[in-house]
Length: 139
Image (tube, rainbow, N blue to C red):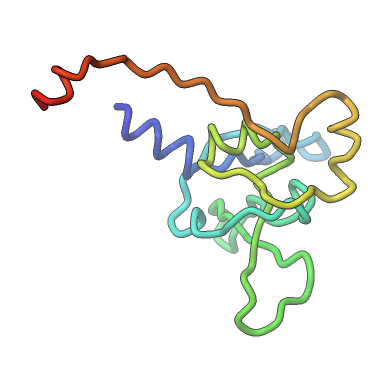
């Protein structure tokens, strides 16, 4: 169970799925779901990309649901293509995805920092059991 949960939370992507309208002219309903899409977890995160711009769920020619990655700019040959995991604090990125941002975030997140959300550090508390010298030697 723990392995499956860790895979879902670290590899899954929260995406909006738009249901077909129930009646002609009716507004479509949107549901947010957590999906694991093969190979999609190979995309790395870039804070320079706005959340929701880099990927979306679309309907294929046969009506099936597909996850589509969208280039938000022109890329040079061999350049890494990234997506946005959303605007999260370093704490949330560490807990959910296993990494923190090293560089300063773009201006788009400056207003989030002004709201008291810290994007430049992640505090972790760790309590370790203290072992005596005899216990260490016995191992």
